[in-house]
Length: 132
Length: 256
Image (cartoon, rainbow over all chains, first blue to last red):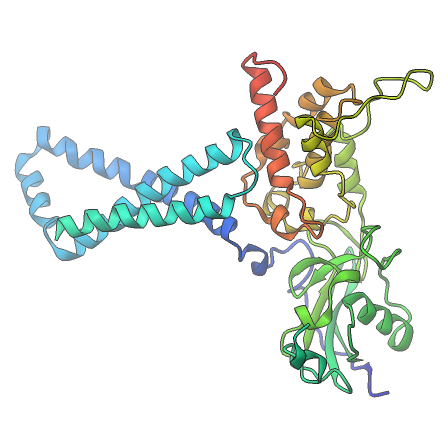
């Protein structure tokens, strides 16, 4: 018998229960959840900035023109792609959640989650192509 | 099972015939602890529970763990295996070992008593809190209740009755991890099952219980419960049913 105890290997508390092991999160619905959350936070950060820029039309036209010139930069175009992606993924993620919770459908949840991502990427991609 | 696994080398990196498995078992109690390594002989069709039993019988009799039926019916042997909650009696080593290693720890989201044994009291207390207990609608002198298998409510109830109370969904749930008051997938699924059972008379009591703080509306639909349920049940779908039922009742739509 070559088995036996080989004591002394001790990784401390790294695997104590109560800690969140990352592997539990490696599935489609968890990714859909975190994408919805992060896109929501991203939009919450964007919207005040957006309204502030709009307000420049009334308060400081020169600054607004300067900002609009800035938005012609390729990097900003790329950022706009990301923004539309966030908007689309948050919209369709919300629709997916409402369907999941309000329609007693059997279980095509993963398909809905994947569809959310696909439609969002498509819409933001179209937006990006139009911009450049 | 694919042929190459029958004949010797397995995808888990060990050799079935005479290899060994490096098993890191969490040892400790409620105050803390850490992993201890054991080298366990590899065998064909070996389950994770076989591995733990080998350690307890051959290497260290003080290892504490919990099991009963060994065939996936009693729900007592669930543990974290390589960071995922699993029923160890029905989990084959070759499916979960990575590079010839296994890391075995007590279930997540529950207090540890000793080694691999968790205190299940918080888990079952929440079943009672969710009113996931039978509310009789008839006595022994009444006629037998007629239960029609194809009734839509019965189909909803039947979907969840194979729950074996193993707490794997509870261990997989990030909402439980973040909110100690959350009732958890198992208790809520049981509440939904009873809510749809025509013999249960506690519909309103169930909806009251599951719509409080920490009830069904705390669920973020991450789906880890349904992803990890060893019996392929869908607690997330059951919780969605409770959300509909409580919302319908709130807006005056009657029974959801």
